[in-house]
Image (cartoon, rainbow, N blue to C red; front, top):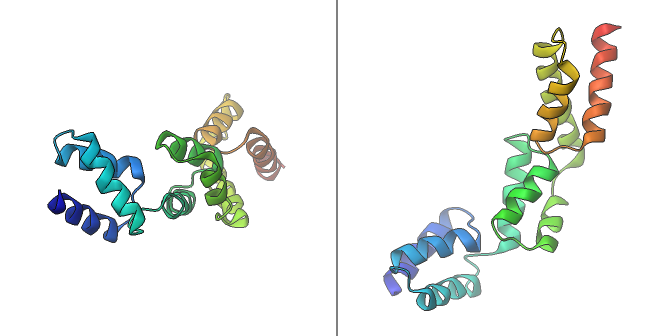
Length: 152
């Protein structure tokens, strides 16, 4: 068990992990022994190798800035990893709103350039924006701006 704990400390010191991901790794390493696995995870949390808020904040910032995800998709993915709702909301507050808005503009503009002559352009743009995790109203507003800019 000590060897597994050391290996998990090493992993957690290199990058952020959530409790669920580490629990899976520990369970595999300890051949499914839940009791020992929970002790290992509790130790990692007590020693601050694991922190749900720190993980959620890093995840939200990375997915927003690097992948161009909106808050809806980030919220969904974090909740699927077992992160509590209050932690998710605090992590989403860490995202720079102005940069997120600029990312949406850039994503939508690039997609619009490809689809502007498509008869189903509006539908495809809405679907694209929603799949990226942005709100319907934000997408609609951005679509209308692009239409005015490109169609005069």
